[in-house]
Amino acid sequence: MEKFSLAIIAFVLTIGCGNQQINHTEFDKKAAEDILIGHVNLEGLKSAPFNEWFNAEFEYFQQDNSSLNTINKDNFIDHVKITMVLGTWCGDSKREVPRFYKILEYLQYDLSNMTVICVNTRKTAKGTNVEQLDIQKVPTFIFYKEGIELGRIIETPKLSLEKDMAEIVGQ
Image (cartoon, one colour):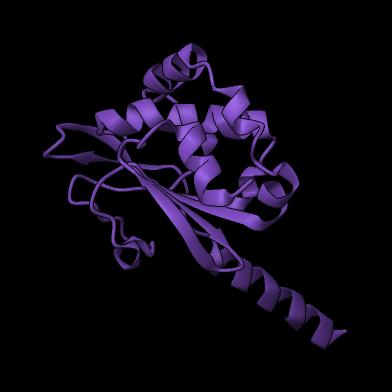
């Protein structure tokens, strides 16, 4: 019984130490505003004050279903992981990120397969691996399959989010 109790205590401590703070905000001097920083999820982006721009763009955007329908959804949903790096202070992120979420909703993508990192105006975020991702501009959407990078959409799409995604993840 004593070994069982020690195992439970060790498990709880491991989980507690491994938890990353999510949806953390801080004041960014250069942006002169509060920003999300580090690991975030959809709930963080839909919280005030970020929800003002997020919800407005999400509702306004009409995705191109014909381009999205060329994506092999089973392959995409089951095998493609995404890392999104954005700045809540950045105009391009405020436009493209809500649109990207709307596209993922249409594709019925499991958001637990996506890592979302918010950076400050220096494009850093303590406690993340963002420095290893070679982020030059935000937002950056990185697509992986079996741990191999398939491609990126950087700052603004070449054609559109939908067409660029279809080209990267295959049909």
